[in-house]
Length: 65
Image (cartoon, rainbow, N blue to C red; front, top):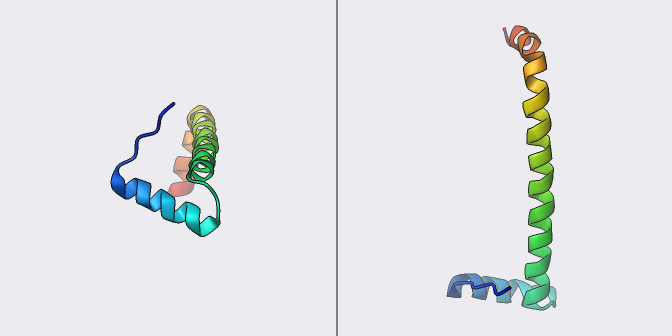
């Protein structure tokens, strides 16, 4: 896989890597892992809410009144 960044993104990544004393590749790989983990949790939560909220819709509506 080849990751193509524009000049501004490249410089931001370079600065972050330099600040952390790590390679640009290490910083980018960690960012990808964190993104995948975060969005996977959000997708799972969305699935649960889509399934469970309709079951309690009437009770939630009454609580909101």
